[in-house]
Image (cartoon, helix red, strand yellow):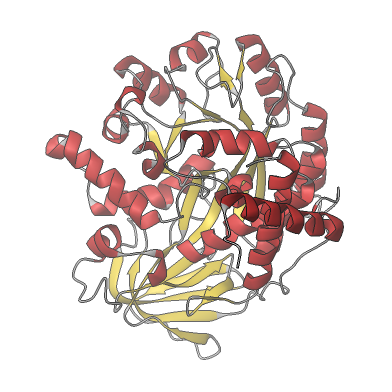
Length: 479
């Protein structure tokens, strides 16, 4: 029998891609939802859980109940009498707000089929830049849906979809449709596609159309989905694969977003642009920056004064060389800057918020230690409530507060990697893994129960993602 070498595998992949192309993967529309109808928002009560509310007015309960009705939290107490509510046994579990991710390139999820960690030529940037130019709306839908399936498995209830490959308004529609079909809460950050010249402005007409048709008042009255923009880097050439625009171009792009009342997010990889943005009068509370690695004390003071937030991605940032800077979590907290946590991408590593918190804690202790205290409870707050503050939705989610929407998760504490549990915050930061996430509820809908999806067709998600990865590889001629 002939040996199977790398070239044979690639040829086979290309042949499979032809099949995928003819079956609709490369069509310019999205063929529809591959999930069952989302569950109804019925009435239920979680009973006997260790309740971590992230609400200082309520506190935490060693054993408590959480009552949910019509998608909202209506009660949190040691015991709640409710004869009509369906009971969910929370004994041996932590009940807490779901994780809120504030920066995730969901469109790159299928690229994990092509990325190789230890080969610079097949790393994240070369692969996503090359194949990103060949995405169709169907590819965007399937890749985002793959990432969101993993998000639910990891306990995320809100995701900031950092979409810096919106090749057309139809691509934005596809990504929003994937978010809607999966049932996640989140924001789409509408971005400029891969390969576009830096002197070409953002598609503000397309942005306006998506805002008009998708946002509240136009079929999205449940308020689950929000819109913003993700900007290219401003002012230098630190990242040639992701674009770098002038201050004047930033004024145009950011001005178009602000005219629609939309927030702005931007990477700050490389030398910090904070002073440049401040001098250009571009900073404000509607701006989120990503990757806090090289800010100065003066810049952190400016960020605090302007109300700018910073999203840190400890898992990915910890892989960067020392020359790229250090994760300045402690310095930002000390300066009073709003901070949140994010995964960044799942094409280079898995979605794991427990690991994200662990890495942030370990690096903080290694660099700073007790000089700037960082507790396990503070880390869980960063991953939940502070994410809601960053995204401007803390009035709706981020804590188990009566009146807020029911976005919560149950984490098993009797599993071998956690039991026997002492302090629940230590358990979450030191020991927990996504496999311990038992139940995920978003806006009162139970989307995972017993670590299984209640609506999402997991097999179809994986098959469609594999088909699209093969099609993209073939069209990009990626070897």
